[in-house]
Image (tube, rainbow, N blue to C red):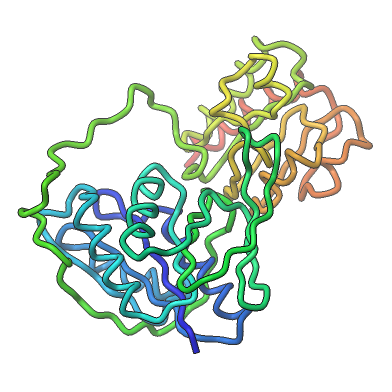
Amino acid sequence: MANTFAFVESLSGALRRVGLEAVTAARRLADATGGGEVHALVMGAPGILATAEVIGAHGADVVEVVEHAGLALYSPEVVAATAAARIGDGSYRAAFFSASAQGKDLAPRVAAKLGASLGADVTAFEASGDAIVVRHPVNTGKVIATLSITGTPVLLSLRPGAVTAERAPRTARVATIAPAIDPAAARVVPKELLAGNTAKLDLGEAPVIVSGGRGLRAPENFKLVEDLAAAFGNAAVGATRAVTDDGWRPHTDQIGQTGRLVSPDLYIACGISGAIQHLAGMRTSKTIVAINKDREAPIFKIADYGVVGDVLQILPVLTEAVRKAKQSH
């Protein structure tokens, strides 16, 4: 029975959410196709071995760990060679990566080494006979392509948030292995990781997202959304496509079928009616709170908690309540 592979991204010794999403996706495909084991690979500086238990808790039967001082930073040649070597030896039907910045560099390298097919930036997948059928946004998301990919193995890079990382505990067998090539012998040696010029929390990593729509009525009213996000302290600001198309917010903030797919612990939808395209990007959030003056708005059909009223009046009150709650703890 064919197994399934997952590459687990890490950063500064900690697992990234997108890495656990890859493990969850591999577990789902394995279970949907009648079993087989999920084998995960994680690479990093000494200490990354401690993450094996978490990877097993998300559905991996086998966790292979590469610890090396030369892997404190992402090393494209070393990681791609090692992942390709592991996949090439495993008789895998599919291998999952993330379509993160790192994954967009890594997955094509591995596919080229293996001569394998790659479904890139996938938002949904399912097994269908000998093929794996995937959905893939094209033309900046204006069109969703459905692709049927055959061959073994099929490599897939998942758009961050396309799958919600879930626990599926296994008592994983853990093995420490060597990198396929010595990091010191790589032609490209990473020297430094520079922080971006923004302090914004990434939408894919934020546990709380406060998102705004046209119900805010004017771009300057997004200040109320930013204030609420700041009050939480661990929240990112999102937006609907209508808002980004109008230039109220950058397109990097867009959440929806043609934007970012997110699944935070808490999603607060402010003045968002709930278009299908937007719901497709956030409906897997664990708890959804909707604020809208239209009690018939579709967003209330998926919300766990709803507030019917003027978002411009409610947001300052809610922000103050969150600030007081934070101060009392």
